[in-house]
Amino acid sequence: MASLRARVVFAGLLTLSAGAVLVAQTRLLTFEQLTVAGTSVGITAATLTTPSGGRPLALCVARLETAQIRFRVDGTAPTASVGTVLEPGDVLTLPRIEDARAARFIRTGATSGVLDIHCEPQP
Image (cartoon, rainbow, N blue to C red; front, side, top):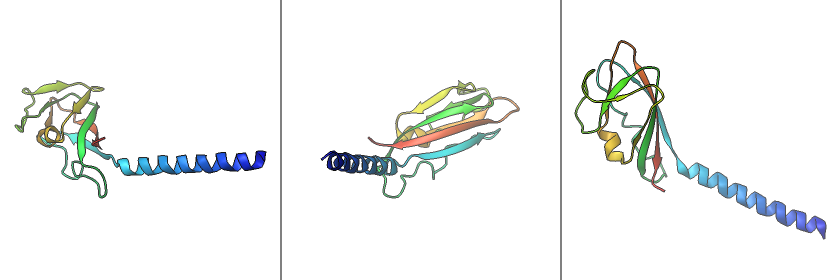
C-alpha cells in the first residue's frame, strides 16, 4: 500500500514538474546586451520581436553596466548632454513595448555603457 502511495505521489510530482517546464519554456523572454557608444542607438528589432510560438512582448527591463548614459523614449535621439541620465546599476523599466521601440540611448562621456535588456511577454 505504501508503495502504491509513493508511486501516485511520484507520478503527481512528475506531472507538476513537466507542467513547470512547459510554463518556463512558453514564457520566452528575449535578451540583448546593448553597447551604448557615442552614436544614439535603440534596442534591436530582434530583441523586440515576439519569439516563435510565444505571447506578444509587453515590457522591457534594462540594467546599466559600466558607464553613465542618457536616454529618451519619445523617438528622438538623445545627445551626450540632453536626455534622462542613467547611472551604472540603475534599472530602466519600459512598461510598453511601444516605449521600448522608441527608446534611444547614448553615452555621456568617453566610456561606452552596456545595457542588459530583458523583454518579456504579456502575462
